[in-house]
Image (cartoon, rainbow, N blue to C red):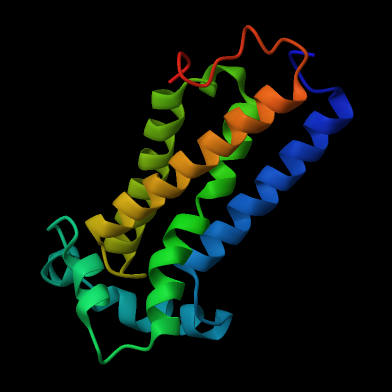
Length: 171
């Protein structure tokens, strides 16, 4: 078996679209709908991207170290933020190569995960929906990496042509 059956592919696409909607909701729209109605009616008019850049973290690992070393933040908050950024992108690393054979190469999937994460960060910056953080790019891409490795393991376990699918050479 080199490809999934049509019903499995359809289910995969439904799961992928649901995942993307959930990811977008959790990254861009964390608050309730009335907050965003008010924000875009009144506050967004005064928002400037330059203000967003003042809050942005462009120093790699700065936020990660800050969370790790902070005694003022609860462990639950730290775990939700750091692990959430990783876990949130694992399905992308699994589903993208499963659904689109072109992405069954490590660097293509990883680059797509990085671009998706960058897209979310830029939307947050442009519209003031969050804070641009390079550490989110790092953690999201790490999640995509974990997902891709899980995809490769699953592909190797569940396909008939184990000789052709080598997790090392496909990286």
